[in-house]
Length: 138
Image (cartoon, rainbow, N blue to C red):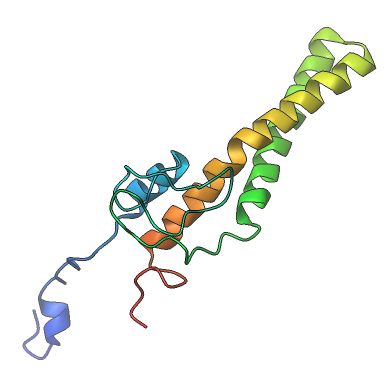
C-alpha cells in the first residue's frame, strides 16, 4: 500500500461490539418476539407493541411502524389474490357469489395473519438499525 494512505484505509475497520444484526432481528419480529432476546413477546395485544420486553427489559416503545405493515400486507395479499383469482376462475369457473365469498374470506384471513408479523419485522428492523430512539447515539 501507499505510505501516504490514511490509517482508516490501511487497516480493516473493527466491528462495533454493540452491533445489532438485521436478519435475526427481522426473524424475531416476524415471530412476534423481542428483537433483542427472541424470548419475550413483542405485542401486548394484537398490534400494540409492549413498552419493554418482559424477558430482557429492552425498551420497545420507540417504534414507528406507522403505515408500513398495512402497506406490505396489502401489497402481498393483493398480488397473491390476483394470482389465485386468475387461477381459480380459469380452472374451475365457480359461481360468482361463491367465488367472491371464498376470496373475501381468504383475503381477510391472510391479512389478519400477516399484519402483526409485518409490524414485528418493521419493529425488529428499526431496533437493529437503532432508528427512532432504539439506542441511537443521540
